[in-house]
Image 1 (spheres, helix red, strand yellow):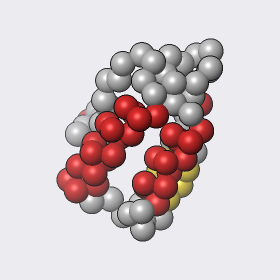
Image 2 (cartoon, helix red, strand yellow; image 1 turned 90 degrees about the horizontal axis):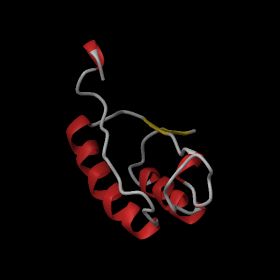
Image 3 (cartoon, helix red, strand yellow; image 1 turned 60 degrees about the vertical axis):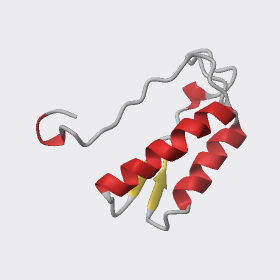
Length: 84
C-alpha cells in the first residue's frame, strides 16, 4: 500500500508451478496471521484465474479444488465475504 494504505496489503512471492498442496500450505498460515493482526470486519477475496493450471497468463498449477479450499477457509472466519 501507499500513503494511507501503507502497511494494509500483503504480498507473498510464490514459486512458478506451485500446486494446490503447496499453495494451501502457504495460504492458510499467512491468512491466519493476517486475520489475527488486521482483524477485519469483512473480507474481499480475489480468486484470479491466472493462478489456475493451464492459464496462459499465469505460471501456477492451482486447480479449481485449490481455489475452492481457499474460499472454504475464508468462509470459516464467519465474516461477510465478497468473492471476486
